[in-house]
View 1 (cartoon, each protein chain N blue to C red):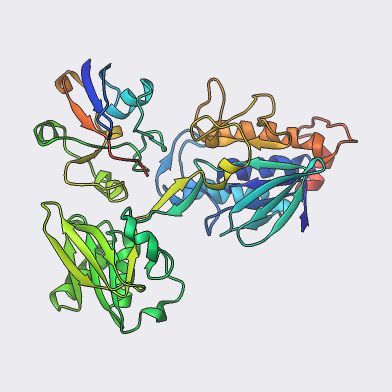
View 2: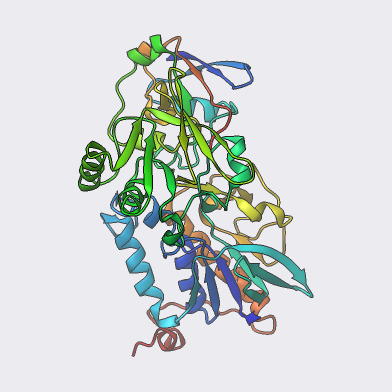
Length: 106
Length: 337
């Protein structure tokens, strides 16, 4: 279980407990947190669960697998701290993770 | 005006199998899809990815699944309208008039929306100033490459479309290629070629840059790019091309008076009809309690929606349930003995 903080682009914060084994995307969708669309349902085939992860946490997360950056090319305003939240698996180690949502998902 | 029993919007697996079911029960249909090919997400997003949960097919790719579905509906000779998008659906005396962007018109008692998560549209620049030049000097696809001859063309993107066009246009234009990171997702041969052209100074390559602004008085003059740490550069530009892949947008479906739940359409589970009589929604675009976004669910939904279409297409006939193994009528329709 990990407490995860989702911050909407307008600054609104949502803190939820997400079970191990779910993804950060699922944690948002299951708790009706706006700002993550996840059109493809988590198959890394779209870029609508895009989040920004600040430096400290970004480096602690398991590295991106092949293909994630290719999808991120197609996200709304990606930068070097961008991740697809469907590719971040929740574990106890992620307790306290904060993710920032972009202005929109396209 | 094309008269038909059913217009199917979307040529993905769900739309294709629904067409099969319509053919089996003796109805005609016309299939419209915004993409230039049949197969929907299976072809556009994952033609090579194996799928493991099609009943009785242990493993197949999106492309194989599509080809088999096309083969399965061949006997019915249904017409496909590709590269076209349904724009308007309006009611007229218990029927629907369906209009497409290319100007085609259908008269039908039934519309089946099998549109996945919507239609595929090119992903555009998010820079506000790019809108002003959209379609004139800011482009997302190329219809006539001769317009770029001897011009300055700034291309954004890291996939095959961006690389292929950068290589092609570098023969006759002054090309700059801009991508947000060092790695490209195009095929290795193209990436190699781009690097060669860049070393020879034939293409100006800027990685780790993205668009900041486009400027011009009347016509486009220059484009400003920025790196992540805020450094910016100005490039002369007659044309700006963006190749960022496709996005799925609900598009005009949202304007047809259907109930919507976020981006999906609520339906009943008896025949997958929406709140509008004669408009059905199946596959990823529909929702109901327990909905699973699986291809196999789309098949089931399509089969039932087809029966739902029957009562409006043949109001004076009674639908009779038949098995393909036993019915001679069905065998006739399939052209088998």
